[in-house]
Length: 319
Ligand code: SF4
Image (cartoon, rainbow, N blue to C red):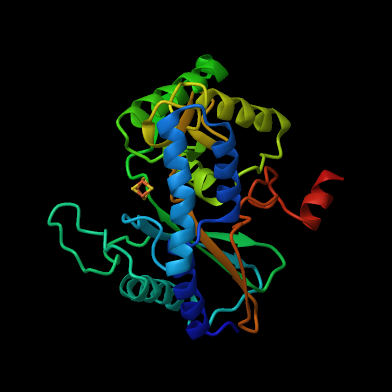
């Protein structure tokens, strides 16, 4: 049984890690951009950001003044047992969010949409978001926190099968140019694209693709992996660089996740995980020990399964 006090303790540590330490994969991607960036101002911003990450880590302070909106992704092993069950788990994540907001500190960004009520702790109605997934034959749970910035860098469009891949490129470029020009998400960004599903799933997949896959990872479908490369190059050739200045570093990487959709449509969403691509993850074992990492490893074969059954049942069904 995983003790709930342990879950809260690890969650608080993750909140601080995410806010302060830029993940290695994003850092490596930005260093590559620094080598190839063609625009003077864009190159200056990238250099300043690389120095800023170092300073944040050294001073143990948040890497950006806007600490984003903290959210949680929880993956639960099929055999995991949590003290107090899922309600206790959610309470622990809300407590960790509130405590870290004053301890790190984080900017208390969350307010009521109409009354602007502010609990001063990033907790409120439907905040922080908690999304769940499951994993077969495992007795651990995994917590990932993402402090999503780039508030306005997301968009959705219902495309149709006839729009084809060319239509997806058009919407992608429209979004990058439209949002980039108005400076609504600090680039270079990890761009996540959700293709297919219903409208809500398309949005969820796109955000997960931007926030939960590491720079350099590729979709296991070779056709989609090729598209990810193509989209990355396209994005870096629109003439825009870091923070919207003229340059060639708009996209650190592009990730695409798909879901089966209605035969009459092809919903698509585009999301940007900004210069502060904040995520931290830990697996908590059945005995309470924690293994920290920055790769959430969210999209597993199980998560992307397309069969009715899984494991032995799937093998039997195929015979
Ligand atoms: S978009 Fe990202 S880097 Fe820019 S201000 Fe917001 S959190 Fe900070």
